[in-house]
Amino acid sequence: MKSIRVRFNLGKGPNYMKWKIQYPDGRVDYKDPNTTQLILEDCILKNHQGVAKRIYEGGNKTVCAWILCKKIQFKKIKLDGEIEKMKVQYNPRHLPFWIYKGDIVDGMGFDKICSQDKGLYVL
Image (cartoon, rainbow, N blue to C red; front, side, top):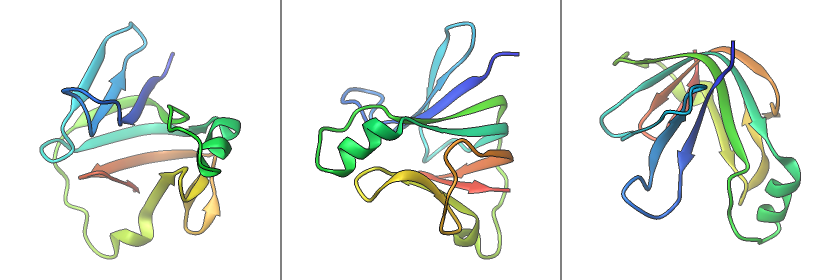
């Protein structure tokens, strides 16, 4: 089974600052993070470390990271408690890796990741 590819779209245009979802059959969908919550299942965090390192060192931003998942749902769930402890982060301007609980998690798999606004949280 091929994976669904999810990333945050920073390209200029009508889909700027939206989640970009690419399906294995070629369909592409965009979801507004202010109105749609993503629940990603059977996930792997992908990162092109060479590209991310160039961005980290001051180069132009380009696509270098995404999440592969086997299933995606769009529904509201309430994230309670100390959700910041569950946050998985990626910003190659600050660090050229996916970070979770202070550790580099490039290539790591997670059962479930949920979005809330622009943030991503491991469930």
